[in-house]
Length: 263
Image 1 (tube, rainbow, N blue to C red):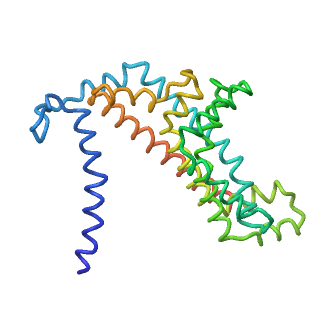
Image 2: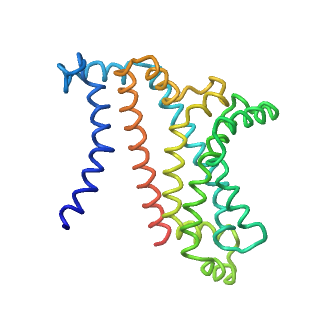
């Protein structure tokens, strides 16, 4: 009974996660793979390597995606931390309403939200700008970041901050030496989710960026529509690699810096 209970989640993981990933990898390196063949006739890395290292458009898209994601992380954390501290530490009138408003970007259909955001960006002259794009990315990242930070801050409560302020520390000193190290687990989750959501944004980047920021997801999407599955699969594999590797580096840096601050 115990073996079967452990085997089921593993099989579910293989079917839902590993098998689709395997198909994408096989599509990216396989040639002459036609129905009803179970496996491609040839396996070749030459086209994959050529597209990765000799395609300037792909490299530019990678750089653009990462630059936008890093800017989105910075803007999201700046907005999310004060909001999470207010929701996690204090009781005030309108707190329940604020909790609902935080999740509005996920509740409202994205097309309707982006159409209205486009009008706002045009009004303020931010359409096609870097700040305009990362602002819209941050809008979709904030619900995840705030939720993760609130859950973490609610566990530690504000008693350490109160002690710090009573001992003469300023608000800034308290934040950087007490709040930030104690909430690093929530910060890790918030940064990682923000990076993933920003990297996968397609319509918001295309609409608000007005074609000035061609990210990897923007460049990859048309290939799937045109039936160029091998190129789309190569882009998909590269997208996964350049999503997972920076996530590992971000996680390592935050964990290491958090331990260093506490010591």
